[in-house]
Amino acid sequence: MMASVPKINVDRLWSDIISLGEITDPALPYTRRSFSPLFDEGRAMLSRRMAEAGLTVRVDAAGNLIGRRDGRLENAPAIAMGSHSDTVPAGGRFDGIAGVVAAIEVACAIAESGHQTSHPIEVIDFLAEEPSTFGLSCIGSRGMASQLDGAMLAMIDGEGRVLADALRAVGGEPDSIATAGRNDLAAFLELHIEQGPVLENKNIPIGVVSSIVGIRRIEIEFEGMPAHAGTAPMNLRQDAGYAGALTNVAVRQHAEAFSAREDRYFVATTGIMLLHPGGSNVVPGRCKLVIDVRSSDAALIEEFTEILDRESLFSADLAKVRRISMKLLSDGVPAHCDQRIRSCIRDSAVSLGCPALDIASGAGHDAAFIATICPVGMIFIPCLRGMSHTPDEYSTADELGTGAAVMLEAVLRLDAMLIP
Ligand code: HGY
Ligand code: MN
Ligand code: MN
Image 1 (tube, protein in one colour):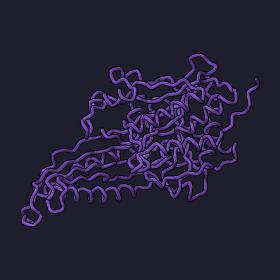
Image 2 (cartoon, helix red, strand yellow; image 1 turned 120 degrees about the vertical axis):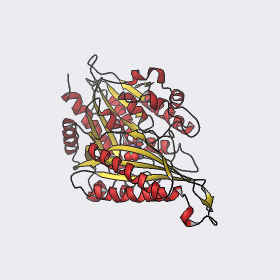
Image 3 (cartoon, helix red, strand yellow; image 1 turned 90 degrees about the vertical axis):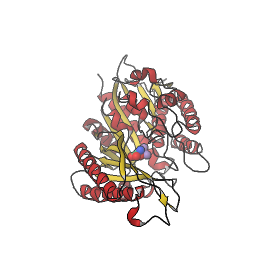
């Protein structure tokens, strides 16, 4: 039978988004945290959909769900697409998920058309892209990039689970984690919502990502002395929360200064600030901060970390408490998308009559780790008022369908372009 031109089925794509969105903690939509029963339920749906797309499905040693369709050329490196299906708590239905379901739809469209690619095609749902209960993010893509080490596998979460055991529970094999490392990918494409307002404001349907920030997450803990809020004289307090607050102000002030440097992207956020014991009438004896530092320039992240070290010690002295720890929870270097793949995405968009805009990513992505093992490209689609990591996160079926059509066109072009 003659092959027809592969075509995206937007209704099928949209139905996958809606179906996955229904697999959530009902009390906290949309929540499908990695290593949770809900995540497993979402994975079961994705495995089924990958099989329906004609893919052979497996879970690698790092817990990534991978669907593969062989190409015409024996042993040719694969062209991979994908993203992540886990969410932040009370997150959205599109962050990561859009990239996974769009990749499945591209594979479906190719299979339905009867078109035989030269390269194998792979669809990947990376495990735990969001910061997990272990404090580590991008667990699956680190594993595929051979950057998931023994210390990480030994991490323990708040419920006492060891990451290696949690990995086994999703089908991973921590004892042979090295087998997750890949050197047989020709290219990797990730479609993702922009998670910012630029494309929507400019009314442009496609973003061609230039670079992806490196993200460093640092945990700082202060220890003072819990005391009665009513009787402890102000000058005798050892208030750990005060040290945390002073440090938080320093994070904000230095980040504003760093972000003013035009030529480089920089942001820093104190996203977690825990006071112990957390009573309104108790002077906090302990305070734990987690600070998220991002930049397109690794040297700026280093410089900010040194300043944070000095400022947090100064804050501890001022509050008459001890800084008992400052530790790296996770680290990722900035990544640059491959020029040839960027041009291919841009040409694909133009060939479909879609305006496209070059754009840097302030969000972290699995593609940043995969960029260390093969050339990568990212396709951004607009999202409502740039919102993300919130239940109000939204992209239209048309925006999603346009992104998937550009990714399909780019895959077919790369398949021809990258013939070994
Ligand atoms: O935090 C991030 O940048 C990504 O959405 N996980
Ligand atoms: Mn996210
Ligand atoms: Mn994401």
